[in-house]
Amino acid sequence: MTQNRTHTCNELRLEHIGQQVKLCGWMENIREVGNNFAFVVLRDFYGTTQVVVETEEMMEILRPLNKETVISVEGTVRERSSKNPKLPTGEIEVVPAKIDILGRCRYNELPFQINRSREADETARLKYRFLDLRNPEVKSNIILRCNVVAALRAAMTDHGFLEITTPILTASSPEGARDYLVPSRKHPGKFYALPQAPQQFKQLLMTSGFDRYFQIAPCFRDEDARGDRSPGEFYQLDMEMAFATQDDVFAVLEDVLPPIFAKYGKYNIASPAPFRRIPYLEALETYGTDKPDLRIDLTVEDVTKLLSGCGFGPFEGQTVKAVVVSGFEGTRKQIDKLCADVEVKTGNKVYWFRYDEKGEIVGGIAKFIQPIKDLVVEALTLAPGCLVGLSAGALSVAQKTAGAFIKTVAPLCPAHFSKERYEFCWIVDFPMYEIGEESGSLEFCHNPFSMPSGGLAVLQKAAAGEIDPLTITADQYDLVCNGVELSSGAVRNHDPEIMIEAFQLVGLGEEDVKSKFPAMYNAFCYGAPPHAGIAPGVDRMVMLLSGEESIREIIPFPMNKNAQDLMMGAPGTVEQKQLDELHIAITATEE
Image (cartoon, rainbow, N blue to C red):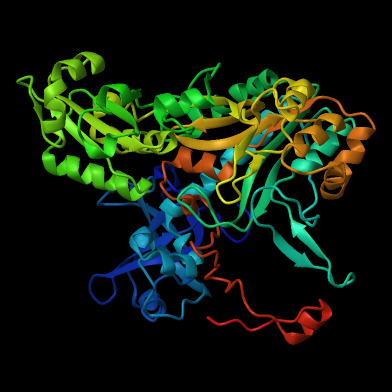
């Protein structure tokens, strides 16, 4: 062993009986039995070992100590009379001859019990994250993360990719989210930005003649938190390939990811290659989402023509979608809760009825369905015991609500939800453009650097009014696993002429392109190869592998939902001298 230990707290076994050893760790617990007898649980990174104190001398050392004090124990290994088969070290114990205090815990009370820290309030967990991480269950997620990152690196290297780091201080770029800005001391009034992604740099590497690039890249976006998104920063497996098509990118990830998911995941079954490919519009129509969970076999059906005239007000003049759940055994109370949960998630109501075992339409909006019962039963192929969930509204609203219903009802229906597996799919053929919700004008739907399907010709037709720009698709794709978007990627627009034409459709001219993306535009003018890439999120990947619901559980030092580091006190105030050096004046605002 290195340091001043002979063994770790997870290493000693029956074959070590009689040996003199030295262990170091945290005093997790002490249980006194009589005046000169106590059981001590010693914990380090690797596990725990029982230490049995049998002398007054040793007790005098331990009695004043608080739990979580760091100590070293030198003593003899012996066989336990009362073994604990649940512990790897449960057959032995150490009888100390010497105990040294290495790091005293000066607090009688801890913010929470270490081994039950996950039950504590999240604010306390984040403020005392260094204690939270002592919990082996919490620590295991970070170990998992390390192993997954190492496996990703090895796999990418085996596929001929070079790991190249790109700048952290760069220029602000309109990439869809708010930048974190860094003021420049040497250039008053000017700012660096932390990269939202290495997008431009990795494309520039392709123009520089590198063939295959990757890195475990830190990305910074000033956006709100969600269950699957941490505010502030995140990491992604960033990759780019020269002279590559969409199929080339798919082939790499379909070879890299399934073995890692099968080896490190909570479930040991992962989709084999090739992953299923689903066009974006088909995904919305069939699953009600562009992030379908293919472990669920429920789908959406359009019943607008069938039900728009049934007399139920919310259906009149609206798109109506249905989800048929066969063999549903839930109670009325469960159905009401299910509908309420969907409404909370989407802001839209779900309506329902059941086709019972007697072949009758009952519950929910049954009275509106009853007059057309035979038509509905035939159209939806209903069998006794079916629950039918219904959504209505504009097309996107009806789809979104039906999709939320599928994901909410699935956990109640084991027959429709094969949970213990990882199901991947590609979402392809994304729209190149959309009408912005706030602007009401034509905007890029996702990545402005994507190659439009059809190239320059299709853009020129749109500019001439021969086709609707909203019908243009991009060579862009998402990787989805178990209903979680792991990544977006695209075949890049590497031709300056096509780039200018694409931006002109959203009201940006050649000079705008040159000023907003000077490096990329200039590089492409010197000859750029076709290239494509993608960047699966490492944090989301590990979250799926660990089975955690919150992404904060797999990040060593996460921020809270308000983008605050409660442990370090960030963001915080700085001295006036620092502000003066950066030529910054703070203007007071009302709280």
